[in-house]
Length: 361
Image (cartoon, rainbow, N blue to C red; front, top):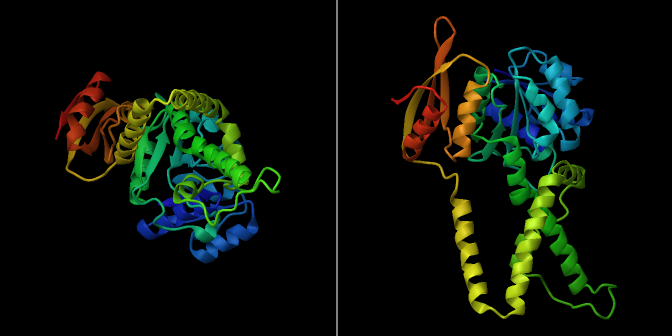
């Protein structure tokens, strides 16, 4: 397989390393910084370096655009303009609104791996970075080419990830809550603690403590994350992030009321519920167990595979693997899906509701 990586930093470099180590892929990479291209070659993250986006994607079967969020619209457009007609193009941005225009092209599938490190740069790229990580995919309903979606889905599985379909709008709301808002809170907590521990003016009001507690270290681990990346993320997902901040304000106001009223019962119930909520959230996406195969007969039209993937994704049904088998006349085909045995019946119902005959193999 021929893979292109546009932007060879931590994520792009890790894609290259994983693809070269775990598949028979040949990886061509482009980065606007010639020094980065040279380091990526030296580290084995890519097989060849291109001088521009067009050169990187010229003969690719899969192209990943791993540019900063602010540069994604331009880089994705350049990749689609130069990529072959049978090449699937994806990005790795943590917001999907910025690449919405690209979804009019059936070759584009938005993506976002939930993986990363506190350090940036190809020097920190790892072949195992995506092992067990959810990799969100945002195909366009009724548009994305099924064969290309399957190719990308299968490749991500080979890289160690767990590809999961999700609506672009839902993706941005989720990321605002579980990723972007925590970064905002980490920054706020760091500034607030500095004001208390260091004194507002660093003078006599300063409180001298030997060390902060582990709770503070955990909560502020991502404070001050790379501004070159995060300023663009805050701005790109501002709408969803503002909604999340508004909900946070309301929840903090409720806690303020309980504290003002000295309502111990409410505080206890709130604290207990938080523990249960966290356990439930962190338990989601666990792998393992028996898989069941479902076979759906579908017409050969753009978007049909995306429609199935999104319907299952909305219901929390993860597709562990898939395969397409077109008919001889290429007018229809069979989509084989492998899902957890405990989710198989729900998946069958959802596919049937879309109007596609489906059976359990």
